[in-house]
Image (cartoon, rainbow, N blue to C red; front, top):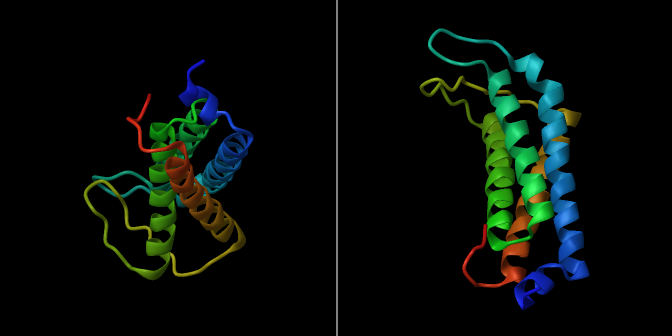
Length: 143
């Protein structure tokens, strides 16, 4: 094993990867649970539930990727998936954006348990993924 692979498998980084994967798994679970509630299609677009299913799939893939690899690229993917979901839930709560192309308007100005749970999990996973990227080092991202 190379020194880089050994460094990625230090106990602190393995624990960090597990926590990031758990945050992404919570994100995916909540999105799957809520998808049917938001599946209201409009002409020329997709339903919000479809976006929830896509987010859940991205979160699951990112969780497995960071869990199995621990490379800078895997932390970057996890950060992008988690932080984009966090930004979407916060923006959809406080800003009334119109439908954009096939993406429906998702404004919902209330917080409820599942929404707050997903926001906390996404935010924590995203921040921890950025920390993981920093800890792994500045070498070339590996696939």
